[in-house]
Amino acid sequence: SYELTQPPSVSVSPGQTARITCSADALPKQYAYWYQQKPGQAPVLVIYKDSERPSGIPERFSGSSSGTTVTLTISGVQAEDEADYYCQSADSSGTYRVFGGGTKLTVL
Amino acid sequence: QVQLVQSGAEVKKPGASVKVSCKASGYTFTSYYMHWVRQAPGQGLEWMGIINPSGGSTSYAQKFQGRVTMTRDTSTSTVYMELSSLRSEDTAVYYCAREEGATNYGMDVWGQGTTVTVSS
Image (cartoon, rainbow over all chains, first blue to last red; front, side, top):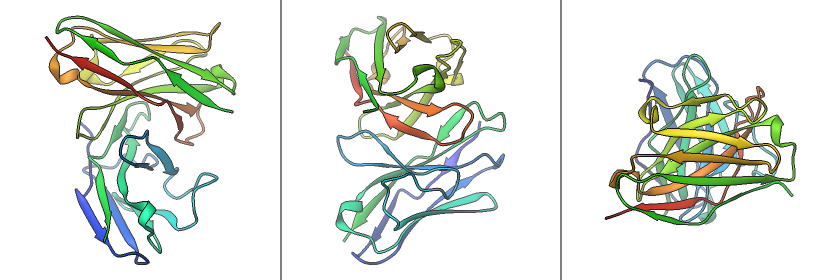
């Protein structure tokens, strides 16, 4: 089965840059998506199609892709960015979706 | 405004079935696929499957094949997810999330979640 691997946790100080990676064991090169989830809330889409940002998402959120790894970058991290972040992609057919295990971002 | 409103919390016994609803409003119901995603307590997101409200076609994650059924009612803009043969490991928050068909825009609107508790 297709799996996406994320680091369990990332910690940064306010104003620094946070980078969260998502690696595929064999990327079929479907697009990657990133979701932010705060405690007790539903997830929110922050990046789609590897690097596009939905309207309303701050410019400090960006995404990139290189080989079998995609990266979510949060520049100038703010306290409100503390949350769990999940990457998501699909298998080669594009039908079956998969989520990474999630990364807890802690703002020190 | 665009919103997905899910049905209320459920408590079920092992072996029973649960049916969760997700009512869409504020957009063209048949233009967006609907996903179901669940999250067990303290765990990550798990994709369960997808339904195309336009024709009713479905695809389910292999893990749930044979136990999950997703349906829709276009007259009320509502999708349903039924999970059978419940066990304690199915205790989770279940979310519906829409995705515009064939655009790769991602799951841009989510329901508020429905807590399903399986306990004897």
